[in-house]
Image (cartoon, rainbow, N blue to C red; front, side, top):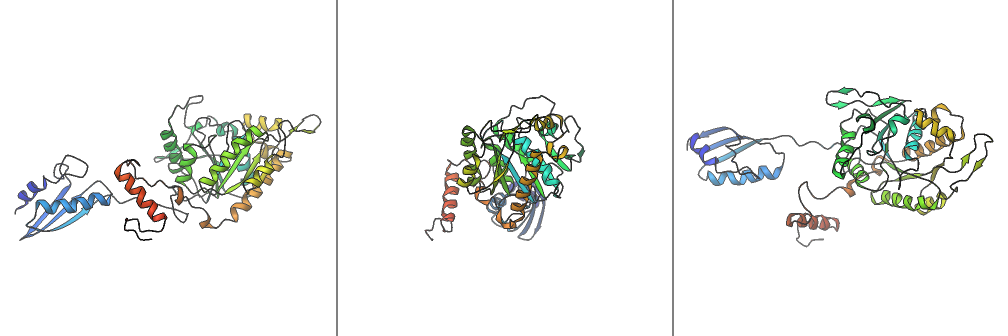
Length: 390
């Protein structure tokens, strides 16, 4: 056969998943023929081994009388970088990631994130804050970077910096006051982009201020990077503690080590007489910490200086370091650092919570059911082929 006849035959080979042939797509780049030996060079656009395997099966069927050698040029699969034993990590340059979470809104989670991050930086750590509270990004105002322009280097954004802490937030990427009306899938994509498409330095600790609750954002983060520690922020009244249990239970289900609980608004310090009153009760988190085998990192009082610092972008731990609140934040940061420094590199993995279904495959489809069955078989000690071994 000559080259033209070979090309004519290859018009019958459809590119997997499409109605057009490999000739129509222009994927056949070169053909060399010598006697009954034929070498075909193909450029394909998929990294999938399944696509290559199917073409290796189909091409010989249309050229049965030739000794074929096929060479495939295709995009390289993206190498998964990870500083965990297994699982996924899209930000390997960050040593430790701390998820700051709460079961409900309005408990002072962002205030805690800001002051705890600065307190940690003041103790010599290279620190960053990622504001992942997409619907309510308050970190820029609290850190005094509201309205500042983000520098773009290539196709990535450079974090802002204040008080020795790198900062990135949707709040500096949108117009002030603009509402974000997104479904869960867009929130999930935004969180991954804020990790992957930001020029984060090699940080010791990245604090991530999460949206309230236990939804898509928390799961996406935990599947995208190995989270070294979770901190639950709550207030002392029992209505808030009910929601905190859900947040702490989430840490357990996502295999995130719990660093502890911050009991916020724990007592009110009068600015006139300096006495402390327990407006929302106090000390109720001790029993909660025992229940979940963790610790209370700190009990932070209600203090007018905290509100002033948050509104003006002058965090209390930095501007009033001798205040009771600042000292308690510093102690909480010390406890967190001890916990993180005690972790071995293989203590944290998100392998167990990775999705088992490939993109575009429904769990209810025959293919999805097969994948699920193989996954369950492997978990139980079999080979996953259905042969019955165990």
